[in-house]
Length: 569
Image (cartoon, rainbow, N blue to C red; front, side, top):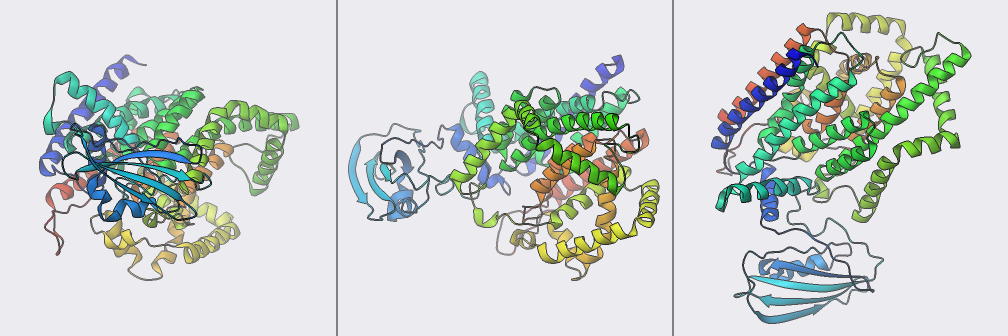
């Protein structure tokens, strides 16, 4: 590290964190209470802060013996009983033990005659009045698996509790150390500050990743690395959620950390960090596969170069070539992967990731799906146009690199050379848009998100608009791929497989889903010129300024509600 870079990086990181702290204070003054999805996340984290954790206890030979502490309000009128009588369920231990429970005052017993689930439930009336109760039940037979979704504190929470666990692990020791008590502990502002810490961690990880990925490029200066780090740390969609209690900053932190460890060859640590990322958002398992794919792509690239050297064929490379070259590469890929020796070697290299992916599939099998909460609003589907939306999103935020006169001229030249191939791509794109376009109910109903206005102002303007945009998608895809030509064809193939896996199954058009694939793409493209880097940073600053101005000052109210509504990503 150069002397100037050694001083410049801490200065940039400290300045960025100070600016974020000032903005954080302004946002918390204007929006003190939970907003949007915070209404689900904050109460859940506060319950964790008070020691009320979800737990599952499986005992008895006939099935599962589970005890629960619940407020009596959930039990009265058989509300809880209706949940327990479902065929697939989870019984959780919820400790509502802020005060001593007092003495037992009464017992009620219920028994289900359902042949599928024989439930013996005992409700113990404890405390003063009917404040809360202890429920014990024995479930049989075992063939009815426990589901992780039927008994949730809040069914609107669809992710695993990684964010809440980290929050408790940071807030509780800090509160003890400084002697904080009362409402300040685990308040909305305190919980939001956790994401500010994640943001600082992301800044450092982005710098380390840029340094590692481009370490062979000696032409890159320390100033360029710091400037690119600052730019990516201020990426608008990610930076905005730094100031709210959402899962995105923590999800990005653990995923980028896992990627960094993978690049340094520490695969067990990478898999462990990948598990932490999975606990923040289940779809992050795709980036665990991406880390494993990095290892596989590196081995494939080495073997392919050896293959070319043996044949003394200098016309074919692993980076770019004609359609016939790609056919040869795919033939080599198949031959390599069907070799038992090669499979054993790859398994030995990637076994930590294989273990984690196996754990993921076990979770999906037991849970009956990837979502742990409201499944009706998060149904998987083959939404292929999501790839087109992501490519357009990437061109918008990377226009200094992707939308240049040189790029446009090269694309037109390529279009002239390969008209048949582009025509085929256009036909396939039209078919995918025709048959696989889905419009989520949230997209049409929630006018607080920018996607609502993008859809209404662009796609709903006319039925044919979505088809007219196909040439834009094709250019975006070509430009996107062209900037990755410095990577091996195996890396590009692996990245696109992960990109499809993380975007296509999503029914809802949500820009937050594009954060990680965008960052990984942006980290791996060659360093642009200093002018383009400065233009990109200036653009991000303007977008952030407009976003926060709208959020703080352009509030509105719905006709049937007194609550203040704000615009956001």
